[in-house]
Image 1 (cartoon, rainbow, N blue to C red):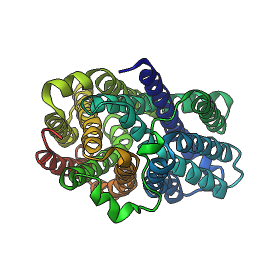
Image 2 (cartoon, rainbow, N blue to C red):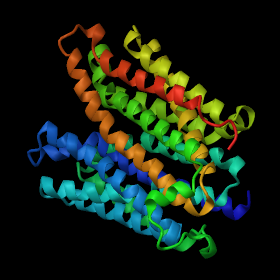
Image 3 (cartoon, one colour):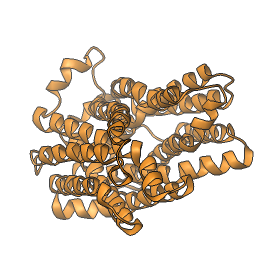
Image 4 (tube, rainbow, N blue to C red):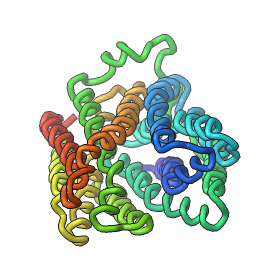
Amino acid sequence: MQKSNRAALGIIFLTILINMVGFGVVIPVLPFYAERFGATPWEIGWLFGIFSLVQFLAAPVFGQISDRFGRRPVLIISTLGTALGFTIMGAGHSLTMLFVGRIIDGISGGSIGTAQAYVADITAPENRSKAMGLIGAAFGLGFVFGPALGGATAAWLGESAPLYLAGALALANAALIFFVLPESLPKEKRGPKKEHLFPAILQHVRTGPYFTTVATYFILIAGFSIMTAVFALFVAHRYEFNTAQTGYVFAMLGVIGVVIQGGLIGRLVKKFGEARLATAGAAILTGSLFAMPFTANIPMLLLACAGIAAGNSLLSPTLSGIASRNVDAEWQGRALGILQSAGSLARWIGPVLGGWLLTFDLDKNIAAYAQTPFWAASGLLLLTFLLCLRLPQKS
């Protein structure tokens, strides 16, 4: 890979890292911040979920715009939008302002597919899963540092401070993109202005592999989101973990994700291929989620958690790589935007489904607490495993 491309990948990595740090910052802070304005638990749930819902709507639009006008303008505007959203939340004097800021941030987060398209523009097909793994590593680091940064900054400077900090980081990132990041999509490769997203995309993708990958990604994220929605309650009831201890476990998941997606994924893809690696990741994730309610002590819990992190880290970047390799070059932004849109929809559906499934276990003994959502998540990942068997070994 050329030196200039490595530098551009570094900036894209930083862009997504800051995005995910901002996403993670609100996890320990937003519920208590919203309670200042009289938010009910249901409203707090929607405050979290609205981000992914609007991201679902925005991702294909950002992808289409980036295919038409280039990646760089979309990344600059969306990063500025992230800064604006966090600033509005930090300055919020009402629940309405929190929702407005969260919606703006969610719309801006729809540019993740554009960032993936940038990566696809500057990498050879055989190196694409490795490069997508770098994006996955940025996700992992964001989930390691975001909640820790949010909790610590709120304790020192107040609950609005982490929101201002996230906004400042996004503003600095926008400046970095503006002054340093080159455009990755030449004008001659940009899509025609009059083409509509649907049904024109059917002419620019290998339909079977691409839509199988999108379906697989959607089910993966839905199942994983069920787990994340109930995990803190599960460890609090089963092992009496406090928020700090729960945060340490999430940090461990993030570190495993960084090691696999940031360092190992490229070598593993070369040795085993994308489809086999995705299938193995789905199998590990399915088994780990199913085993979670059976854990009887903390070492067993951590082992199951490590399996969840490893399975997800093998599966997510390879699916993005497979999707990218089955799309025409000038449609990368739109196609990967659809992939991320599917993930965003799943991140909205998963927690809602997980919370509903948890109600079936509330009257059971502690040993059965949260078994229904974990086993439902495992069932979804089993379906993911079966779909992975249909993915092409070479694309």
